Length: 497
Image (cartoon, rainbow, N blue to C red; front, side, top):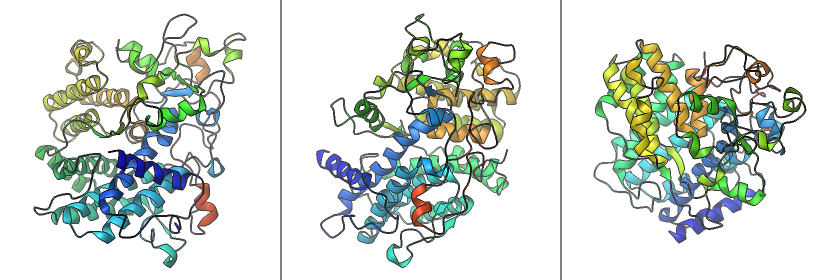
């Protein structure tokens, strides 16, 4: 394991100090001495690090879990949705996934003919492209990673990419036969059945995106029903679990905080208000009571710079609840939780199988799995008996589906913020309040706990909430085929509501 960690860390450092063309990587280690056995952990690490560090931060603001701490300033732009290509928000993720993970995968594919090894690479490609498409919709695919032969690859639309990587996955899975994985594998310990279960869960995620985008919805509906009926998914959680409590081996998100020595995160009003309304003990997991009144107080999104005026001249760190960053010190990077999987199954059972009983079972399993992941398994049963979260108390399928989505949003907190943001865009849950931010702060009637709030200071071009990340500034500078600039208010292809 030490060898794996050293190789992964060295790989990350290799690309952290310069902006690289994704097709021109002069520092990339190649040759027969770099075997697939060593390269796979690096590929996994690159994608996991993107998900668990940079995406964890900005999607935490977009999902309205975080807001900027009153007496700090680093993430004012995220809280106020003040981003464009010059912000370079996704540049490091983009570089690491292409010049890191995808280059590693190509290296493996050039050195192995073992079907199970090839299959693992294809699953990783699906996961990596899913993250890229969910952020930007369009990215290089067909012409990517061809080196000097195609130095400025054309960009493909997200629909084409999803369909293509799913086809790659299907073909690779059909060829596995009785072969076994020959590479070291931190995620599934080289268990091919684990990778098959993960692949099916990724299919479920993407199929639901396609259905709600109205793309071949009938066919994808049959596919999600078949996946749920077969129930060949992973056990436990899919996680990149190589971190410890030792300095230099922290979870990367916590490690960034540790290096800065500055706490920028406070809890946002939507998540705090919903926790409190549902008497959810999980509020104690990732959120701290404020020091002024020893109570949980969420900050209105994007309101940091105006709260002093709203509050009669004072709004300081002591007024609001900080995020408990310590829980993330050695936390694995959550790739696909059992909780998320069960909530997706509940959705399929309710929407497409019209089976409220099966949906209720999966819903409760999703809640219980999240409680267990936080060391609170003994509290789940009492919570599920609460009037606002007992799905059996609800009459309509619409109300039940809304509860499934809301509890999925809660379960993503301090777990997988990128997926939380994507699911908010797909489902429109939590709903957007009709009140403005000042009215919510003033506690005017009409705000329902958990509802999203248009940031009080909001630079997004067409108002509302974040719909995408702008294209990387690096891509704009190095690739003439980068599409025309997109704004944060421009939805990705599957966000059609």
